[in-house]
Length: 232
Image (cartoon, rainbow, N blue to C red; front, top):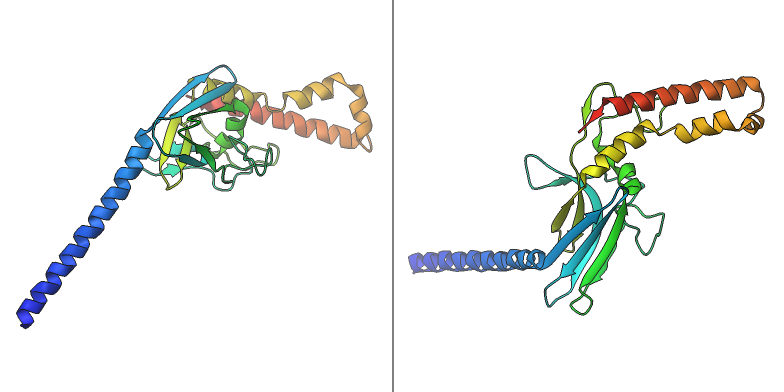
């Protein structure tokens, strides 16, 4: 009886494991079907990427996050700036104050199966710094490069409820935009300084104005060096 009881317990355990595997397999297959049910296309110009998502299934698809990501070389995981104050797409709740960690809760239904969103290059620019090895700098807000630095490819990550992520490659046009904008980071400040004499009245005295001007010139020098060191 003891032997039969042990065999029964083993059979029961095997049955439970098989049931668990079937359940997990069904869930993974549901996620796979859910992803396959999305048709994603993009178009771009010199300043914006437009993404169009078509839900071809007969059930709702929910988008929780849209983030700027980098695919890991060694696993299926994604890297992104988890503490950023910036966003690719504004959330309905926070508007222009959104971060890419704010839930979007966008539903794409069979009745309204198309969702279109625009991502300006300027939004990507603010988040892409995270993937560049800038060193802290006293004179530059972004940071300073110490050596030639390859601009790593990144993607727009569309995170579905349940954890599945669908990625959209960033246009090559963006990397040219980024390199140019890095070099032009202080252009506006310099043009104001050179073109508007009234700016001097914003300072307590000529010495504080001189210090600001010298610091700005140093900042400009770092920005142009950063531009020179970036390559694709």
